[in-house]
Figure 1 (cartoon, each protein chain N blue to C red):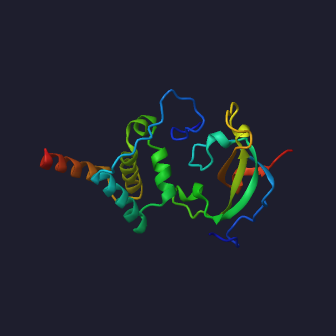
Figure 2 (cartoon, rainbow over the protein chains, first blue to last red; figure 1 turned 30 degrees about the vertical axis):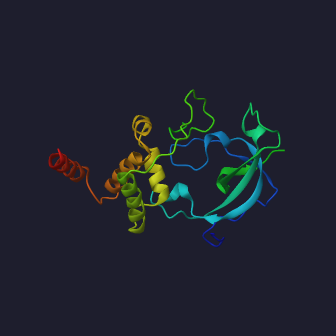
Figure 3 (cartoon, rainbow over the protein chains, first blue to last red; figure 1 turned 180 degrees about the vertical axis):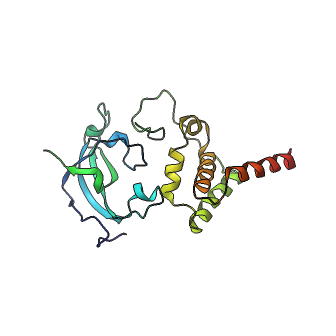
Length: 104
Length: 100
């Protein structure tokens, strides 16, 4: 697991925090699929602090490292016409720079 | 713009192919090359992902999983100056002649 340090972005969220995924489809490599963008969920855990894959993908250093969170979403929030159980959850790992505090 | 690999949530009429298949010898070699290129410092996983996503819809949608890997290796090795497209094309022609 990566650790925070001088070369890392400070950890901004704690488990339980409500967060919204940023929206954007830039031309470069990203690790945040379109289907989860704009959705609101809850931080489940901090996975660690890792070199930024959006920099590594182009031969960059990956610095500053980015905190990576496992974020939990209601499936009914993710999919407009979700037919499964209302308590179903989706867990997905998202880097901090793709998250902002939820408005609610 | 949503890139070609980013399919989650898009509607489709195509059933998902869940059949298993035994890996062919060339697929195993392509997978081994992935480890070797990584160990030698010629590519990182995120670079491979980026190169695969950058193949363009026509290539991405027609190539198989490990064919995408080989196309991405070529792009990355040429980009790094390890090999040139001419060298790769010359070797491919040689192999085609040898093997008919």
